[in-house]
Image 1 (cartoon, rainbow, N blue to C red):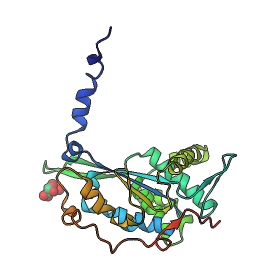
Image 2: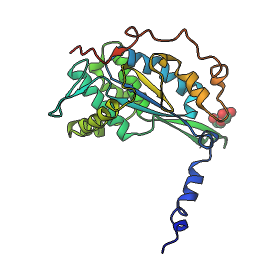
Image 3: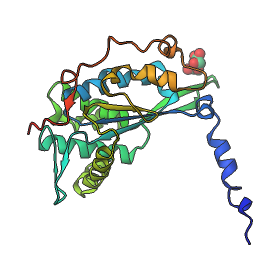
Image 4: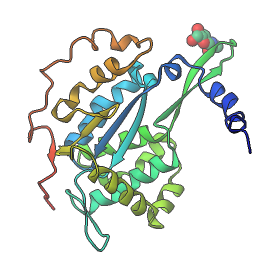
Length: 249
Ligand SMILES: *[C@@H]1O[C@H](CO)[C@@H](O)[C@H](O)[C@H]1NC(C)=O
């Protein structure tokens, strides 16, 4: 009989290598954002709020998952309808393709500079691209989404191929299944989960939830935030959200 202890052996050094940062040792906080590309409150949340964590250091303790499907509907024949029309379905699939192709939101890598000092260099992955598209959506210029490849340095070809081949649609069907299986069901977007806890209309306080969910040493930006989950940013329902029951197309 094979010894069960043989199996995990090659895995152990690999895990040790991967887990060298304090954030890794303490276990990053899982943040999932369920959204749709043309809901202005989703765009605003991504551009103005979520983007902040990549500047203030909170992103170092976060595993961010973006799930671009939102309030879309899948019919029995498998066709997808989106709350803000066909353009939203297209952009949802485009963003899904970018996430699939560059699975990390950003990559911070220590690189030796010319004074032989390690400095963190940011390699742009899917988040800056999505930020760019959502910024255009906020200003109603989302038709120009292809300019975001140039703006962020990501190559357009794999994304366009992913979309044209129908793979983006496949990804959307997976996101639809995940979104529709949420318990309790999502009532609106943006719908944010921090370590599985659904924030509902308190989503604007997501940073406070992240900071209080984290066991390790907190980034500077967390100071004070984990103590007071403020009431004043609470979204009033129907005001700062796109409701799941309203199909506008
Ligand atoms: C290397 O990084 C250090 C720390 O950020 C900085 O003080 C130094 O000026 C950098 N050197 C060069 C040549 O950029």
